[in-house]
Image (cartoon, rainbow, N blue to C red):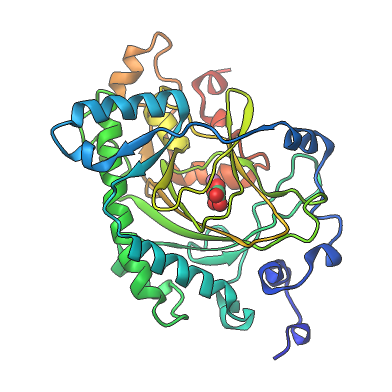
Length: 359
Ligand code: OGA
Ligand code: NI
């Protein structure tokens, strides 16, 4: 069936991006960005120092030293790279390869997963709108995402095309969960909490794998943003990339390029860790840029609470702070509903600040 022959719903039209259609030609205004954002695009500094955390060091006799490094990375940067993580290069390569294959397939095969409804936890979608002015602006990105924990519970919802997708993604998700839990143990201790504190605070836990596909953009000068500035709503994010740059982070008011990390994962803090740590650690503002030459792929693992988990600042950290707890308790479901209902994805936490709730 030719693509043109399908009468697309809005959701599916939005997916044409990665299928070789020139979206700019179809929706010329949807991809433009406002002047304010355009200014911020020019003021970018070259790539920055990225602290390295060795998982081997964290697991060995040098753990106390590694915890100190982790604390400094989380407190001063909000991000780091994790090395010696034990996920084999072969598995990382297989995962990226199958991810690329997935986005090379014809759209028709995946129509059943296409939706903009964020409550559908397995979905193929393009929308994560940047609406810093009142119009809807599309991002230069398509993505597949699906929950991964527990695997047995979710695997039937995953794509089974390419035929080895489920097998490889399950191996990858298991390995990524292992790395994440080790990091969360270290991060808990770096805050003076019990090693399993954060893991327990996440309730039944929620691990989501996402495959972001950023096709080359014919006019990056018109559409420089592939993904607008945001913080991730979850607790901790680990990103693998395909060697094409595009990720930028905000540090001390300046945008900085993050170069591709190849065999390491780029790890950064999400909103829930900011809450649990009572603001000791801040979630990282980041975005992605387009380029006209190479398709960029990234595979974030989002680790966070189950929907019913009640998230609040750890009581020892709240009582150590002269201002007490900075956030009111909330369920993650409520947080996500708010995250998806506002249009400026860097401000979700404000709604849950004690200071804003007692006014
Ligand atoms: C995201 C994200 C960045 C990237 O999907 O939330 O920030 O490098 N991705 O693709
Ligand atoms: Ni993100």
